[in-house]
Image 1: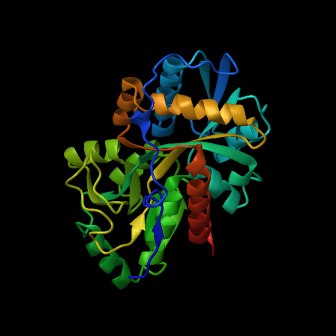
Image 2 (image 1 turned 60 degrees about the vertical axis):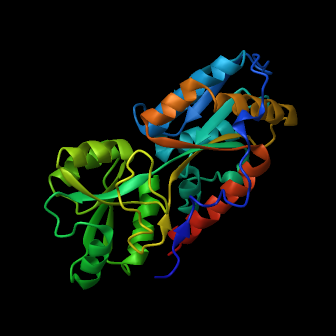
Amino acid sequence: MKKIVKIGMLVMGLGLAAPGAMADTETIAYPTKSIRLFVPAPPGGPTDMAARAYARAFEEVSNAKVAVINQAGGGGVSAFQSVAQGRPDGSVLLFGNSGLHIAHATGRSPYSIQDYKPVAVLAKLNEAYVVPKNAPYNNLQEFVEYAHASEEPITMGIQMGGGSQLKAEALNKAVDGKLRIVDSGSEGQRIPMILSEQIDITTFGVVNGLQYERNGDVKVLAVASSAADPAAPNWPTTESAGVDIDLPLIFNILLPSKSQDKVTELLDQIHMQLVETDTFKNGMTQVSAIIDYVDSAQAQDYLLAEDEITRALLKK
């Protein structure tokens, strides 16, 4: 099997920042008393829930108040624009994910990672490939074999511009282009479609995957990761199925590109405390995200590499 993609392992070799290294837990004075945290996703989903946990934890360790602003328009392009054109004083932040790379790579947005100053990678969220309960395959290896033998394309429902698009493109390479990839909306919209077998395969976050598997409504073929997910340790991984896909959804924090250096320095201090708070930890647990903190000194290289992988996957 040819190598396909590795996002989840990018942090290896960079050296993780040590969140517990900062003993001083006094409130950190931030340059602005109010912050607008732009989220390129609608309310209620895992990105929004993670962003709100981040906002609450930010308020615990600093003197700033954080307003979460959901701007899902254009696949998140509205949020990308709001932050790219925002003031450089730390008053606007983007709670980002791979949607930024996808939107630029597909020509839907003029904004790329180069238009921002990355200040942190916070956590990663795994998703799994799921199929209807009556599907004629029980794991990813069987699915790949079935797809190779099939004379008809297999329909995979995704959300264009989201992490599911990357996972679809990666899987499509593994089955030599046998997938018919269709825009089926958000995960919430795809759930009834997979249950009613309107689509043959899609991706679920760990929370929904566990729920619907437990109810016997779907089969989980594999988590799209090289390592088992702590919340679903019994799920097979893509690696164990012989498919080289490692594509967690990466939560990160971005500033406008011309932001002041003192803002970045203060955010590093805040984040080192923030990721250790019970508020943030519990928030990540709620959405089954894995805390994997990388500070500003390493975040840019990490996200530039993620951008390159995204472009390679989406290149036709």
